[in-house]
Image 1 (tube, rainbow, N blue to C red):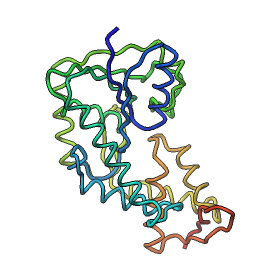
Image 2: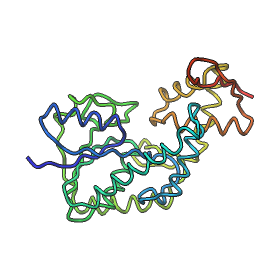
Image 3: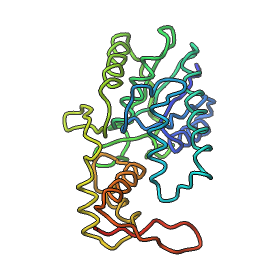
Image 4: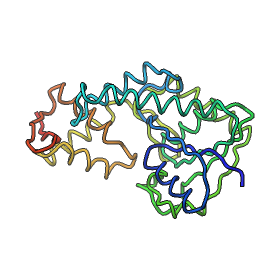
Amino acid sequence: MTHSRYIAWGDSAVGNLKQLNKLTGQSHAIIAVLDDFRMGPLSDADQLSPTLRTDWWKAVWSAQWWYNEAEYEAELVAYFAESQHHLLSALATPEPITIWIGNNAHDRLMLAMIASLTPEQTPLSIVDVTGHVPYHHEGQYAVAMCPPESLMPLAPRPLSDTERTELGQLWADWKSKGLGWREIDADGRIVDYPLDHLDAVLLAKTAELSPQSSSRVVGEIMGQHPGMVPDSFLFWRLELLRQAGRVVFTPRQGPAPQAPTVTLA
């Protein structure tokens, strides 16, 4: 059997693929993409030392309720850089690559980026879980959602030269225009919304639940919004609303750091 290197988005998806290796008696190398291409500027997201992208993530990390700059930032930046280096090093070598994806905006852009950076002689295949497993969120699929057993029947499909060219152009287009928050629309297209796209949703949910833990506010939106919005993005937007005087945070006491209570200003 030909062994391919597997690439997937996030630690949970990588864990599922590692378990799939065990279930099938295979030994595919598995590479994680830790960046999230659904949000923020993409102009240098495919570079080895992405200054703009790293600065973007520093801003997002600093808005998380658990964050302590002195304790976490250097470690997070190093982890981000190590992941990026591992990925780009893998893409520069000719061994076969299989990209595991769903139909969410990040996976589409991840696939496009990989196709744009991989040498022509490197065989590229995909495994798209969309519609082939019973696990999804409002029609949005991700490998991280799939128990390893559900992945066993799925087989890689080679990408044609035409597909690789089209994907490379897709990534080039989004590198120049991607700035905000990205989702898949009803027609299956990637759409870039302004960064404040979900601020009204955050304010409405805060008004509905107030006073309430910010984790509860964020968690309910994550469960209800069809775009699989991550908590990091919502906490960042909530912090910007606090800075703008739209909401108020009240610290919560406990033996470990607690998400603050949030109310409308």
